Length: 223
Image (cartoon, rainbow, N blue to C red; front, side):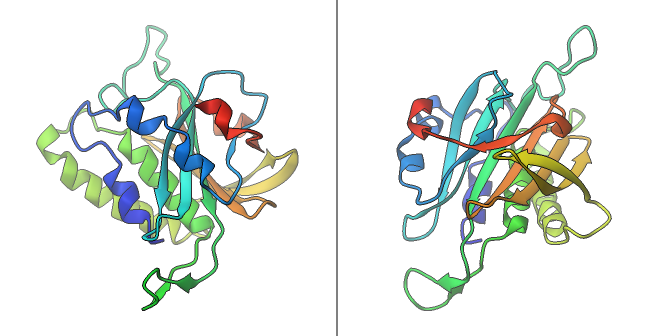
């Protein structure tokens, strides 16, 4: 995907770094998308919040994320309560436009088609953006993030590999197959919809097995 480098750039780069609400919550970019957005279905009754959209070189919106539950932070992702349960419980849904191979904005080459792997990679990098191994010095996090980002890409490029399992989750009420994997940092999954988009998701503290996805009826209500 042409937008993958932008996704990495959006990840907090310093300990405790947080995206400014004004930069994250604007609905304008979401409204420009020529495809439908997806989030958790009505069974989820907790908070919902906008994150960011990713654009191509010509400014076209190609993907974006919607958060559910507690707003995660890098600084205390390992914090747990007295019961041993994570203090932060969240799930982020990533919608990726299903684009065929197409010409670049300047007409000089071809852009890679988006696929379920694109959604899996963006979800994997999204999870990393809110992850910080507790034993790691902050000066080493950039190197760690770069290494883990490359690993996430390799994993997303091999969805049939042993690192992934499959599970069926409802999308607009229809059972849909997803690729799924867990790590010490949380979980990641990815699949496709009947509405011409790919859906990725990542989270921590919330079980992926009980989730369902649905097309957002009015993204403007998130503003």
